[in-house]
Length: 394
Ligand SMILES: *Cc1c(COP(=O)(O)O)cnc(C)c1O
Image (cartoon, rainbow, N blue to C red; front, top):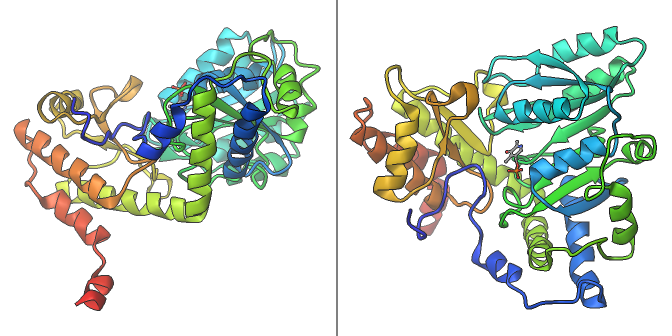
């Protein structure tokens, strides 16, 4: 694997040089005012990016999975019923975690490639008149299939049913890259990690907690110590941690949060949409199809591409790594061997994306795929080129 090439895995994402430097700090006493000067702005930036206006953000030394565990263990009790859809590897893993916690998971199995079935959730929530369901789990962006679900519609369904369940949303591959509105969508627990939209190394689990979810903490009986929200909230209020925090990563978060907010969240989302449109145009030109079935649910951060019948999609990923030193995502779970994935989130420009598309073309040609070299690159160039600017410069 070349360390000169960008990566096109859907996380960890490319780390801008300025963020690598921000993470590289000498030892700073984490009980000093100097630490609070790093941590307080980092936490504020994370809160702004999540649009967690009236809630609280806690940041654990962990990954997205730890953020899930913290969300579940701080708000639920053994035997509590939760509603979740299984439609990709990440939603599957979230269900598995709930089951290991002894929760009673009502699983809706949906075809991988489809979004969370809001209509089915709506029916189940409406029928649950004695409100046995304590939480609804949603994966905003299924990184395994390249499918985005409609969280606003899910909130509408909860409200229409008059259902008080907590809404827990995995935003690991959407927050900081795609439109995400914790407050407006009434999300009670929003989780992400540092290594995707925030463009940092892995190591931070970031959780947004609504006022309503804060009200559930004392009644929740699942065990937690390292992940206890109460210890974190007490220490965070004083600008610190109950244990030793990863100071360098938090300095990186302060810096990356500022980068995202300076670019403007709306501009960040548009950039991701635009880069994704180029990738989708390339896939079209190759005559291949997406794992995502509905155009409206196609992800702007990761594209999962179906290999033609008779081809092993995993070979694309290994060939790209071994021959061209470039990383792409393999298929996971039910779609292993059937899809390969192009991650396009975080620090990415159009020319970087063209290099990824061009490399995938060489790989597919090497493997005997029926594609023409340059066809996808040209299609993406047509999306990315700016004729108006060209004319103005002439
Ligand atoms: C990457 C990812 C995770 C897992 O996060 P870790 O940081 O590896 O624990 C969870 N959910 C989604 C949607 C992801 O993309």
